[in-house]
Length: 603
Image 1 (cartoon, rainbow, N blue to C red):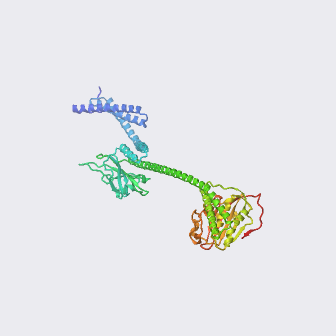
Image 2 (cartoon, helix red, strand yellow; image 1 turned 90 degrees about the vertical axis):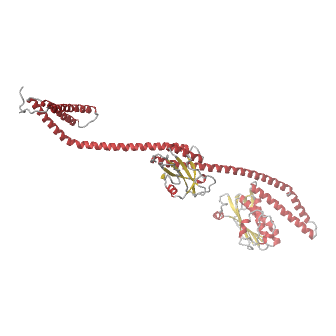
């Protein structure tokens, strides 16, 4: 065999060292050949992999490096020129491929970095989505707990049950060591511990309401952390070393504070709060999370709403009980009133039948007795008997009329009558008295006053006669005048009062009657009392006049019954008096005659 020209001389070598190099080249070549196989497997299994051609080039570089080391195994012994040529070609190919791979990596690395950046962005986005998903799940969990607590709290309308259920449910849901509720005390100056979960704090203990920590909780809209050793927490530290728990407090608005009293509390200001204190287990490293504080805030609001509903229910039940008591009392009073009315009606019936008949007999016999020959003393006594009988008969009639007016049994006797004749009849009735007292009596009827009208003639005569009779009775000298006219539609508004609202129409008119006298008059302070039954003026000469005090009271009721209004005016004592009333009467156009002149009657 021909030797290689590149090896001029043979140099001695350590056989062991050569052996190690030989084995190293063998394993290096084996490793280089296995790497491309693994890369090919990876590319086949990957669904997506960019730069496949770069990977193939990198695989070729590795294969050539392995071939170089493999060929180098034959250089450790005597070798031919062919081995040297192959070795040279392998090294040149490896150098070329390695340089080309290095140049391509210069362009690929920025793309790989951008991919890495996008990967980091996607990773951060995925983490944000995880956090948002966790928040959504937390909110759903909070909502579930809130719905559960709301259902438990609102399942009853007893305020003590509501508060106890709230503490139990919060303690079970949040795993609390203690949960307590401080309510405003009786005086409103302290907070009183009314409910606890595990009774680690004595119920009934009080703290001042003006403490800084209390004001801090009152001024906070949500739950806040408070020191574990503050008066609101009230922790009794165990013996030895321990880890203090985290404590939060939240205010609970008392929307209807008058119903949250422990015993007999007085009224408190409109804005008042209770305080709910929640404590985590002692000795644990657990802390309050935001979603737990949100749950506490929501539950506090729900408790306030539930307590307000319970308060409204209690108020309505109290009002119902009071209303039932009032209804019972009213029913009893109604029965008593009905019994009294029946008794009065029976009495009036007896009086009407048993007293009016003998009274009329006395009056008739006295009148007949006056027509016989009597001595002056006898005539005076008989006249006194006749006068007393007439007064008593008038009283009986007035009482009967008043009773029928008050119980609503009085009905108007509506019919057509001569209106002018009514006033002339009144003049004729009072004429004897005015003649004796030497008073001037005048009657003025307006030209447009209808001759005929539709209404209750008897009651109209009674009203006019009562008013004119009072004018004559309280006038010693001077005059008494009667003026009758129609109230113009534009003047009706002057008569409007809270109780009287006249309305004009084509089928009726309002009669206005004014009676003026120059009598003793009346003080303005006593005018409102004139229409009160059994009440008479206590000023001036009227005290010497005999009367029952029913005339004007009955007249006012008759006027009101005929949809009218009456008033009395006087400037004072000894200045006369003016009584005016209006009432609604129907028109009778078929019988009325035109009257174009002013009718004046004087006596």
